[in-house]
Amino acid sequence: MSTLQARSTAEAEVARFDFRRPSLLGREDVRGLELAHEVFTRRLASRWGGLVRALVQAEPLAVDQVPFDDYTRSMPTPNIVGTVAIPPLPGAALIEMNPQFVLLLVDRLLGGGGSFASAEDLQRRPSELEAVLVTDLLEHAVAALADSLTGLCDGAELLGVEYNPHHVQVAAPSDMVLILTYRFGLTQGLETEGLVSICYPTVTLKPILDQLSTSVAGARLNGTNAANQQVLLDRLERADVDLRVRLRDSVVPAADLTSLAVGDVLRLDHRVGQTVEGVVGDAVVLEGHPGRRGRRLALQVTDLVMPRRPLDLADPEPEASAEEPSGDLPAQAEPAPSESRARDRERSLA
Image 1 (cartoon, one colour):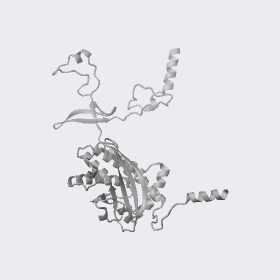
Image 2: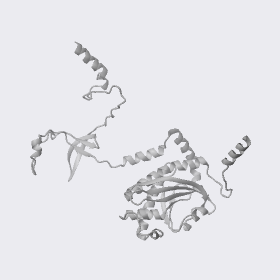
Image 3: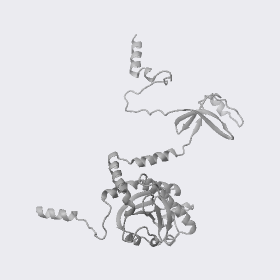
Image 4: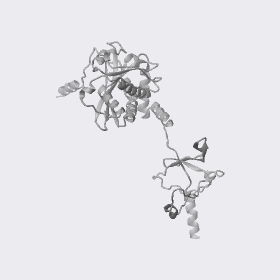
């Protein structure tokens, strides 16, 4: 009985291996590329979603190592293939996009609802007008690819777009390439989905294999990628924030508000030389004086207000000070809440 169990276990662990298609990249190298391209899916879905005003979702589908000839034969004709240079890596990579899905995105970019009259309209090459928008969509994919390879290369550049996959030659027909395939879906309106794949010749990836192994080890130890954090910080520094200018609070009788008419002047408690507050969201971040710069309204910043730390509900004894300590006195000079309560207790007993 034990012999039969051992034989069945050995048969279950046997995997098919094609000696004509050897895998040149190890499991750790492939895992490193998968981790790096998680940024690619998030960035591209966000970029496309903002362009077409809809929610775009993305998920990884498969990772394969096949000869380049087999990869090109598996593509339909016509197809959308972009050649991407990744300096200083040798050679080039390919970004393949499903033409039917891309044409639906183009239709939304042109103001449509993301649908066509018939399926035959999708089985065609993009027109000259659509080709410009297709190139724009590819540019966003190249930018997302550059973000995912931060620290491994100096960026990415779209070299050209081909609609016939047999005209693309970035490797010899027998050279092995790594294919990362992702599924993108448009969930708003007409639910459609399409495939986006990235093709890397193994010769192109050889110079960064050691760095990929290091990044995988660092991701396992730290739980995150420092390069991705730096990219997010760079994006936050260039993010647009709405700043509102708020006067000091004023007490106005309700009768004055109900009797207001066009041309009336409402007297406020805010003095002329008093500073106004700069508010972002619900937080006061700065103070300043309003004025003009040329023909534009302006605000001269006089002080930056650091937002206070939100009260932690887990703290057993939160501080209850009514005033901030002055700049001349150190913060340690203020009595602790427990000492002040003890003094109040002694005074009440006396």
